[in-house]
Length: 114
Image (cartoon, rainbow, N blue to C red; front, side, top):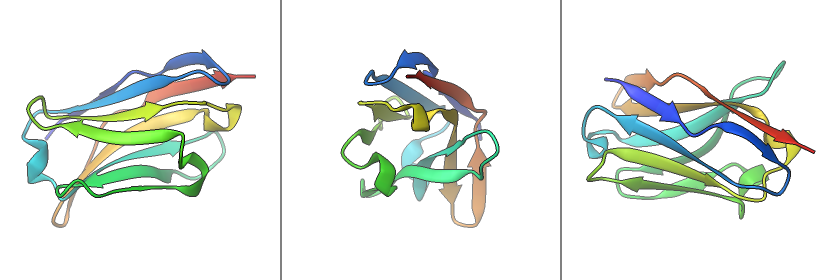
């Protein structure tokens, strides 16, 4: 399984970015697809996830600003990030779980300037 993350970049505070996680298999075969992030010197944290039944959850700090969604036909999971803050600066990783199997994509860097 390959997960290809893209869409990161440099943006000013208050701006928006959309991250994409493209899988080389049907995303509906995964129990959950998630976005994690890791800021310098900090532990990796769960940002948002979406289940095969389209239930989504968010960490408190991004609620109301980020939206996770998926395009089943394209096998892509998106993370729409609005009202970005400098604290959102991190490497963002895509993750998928199928039963006891876990898959990680490479990171995509998001930098938010103040």
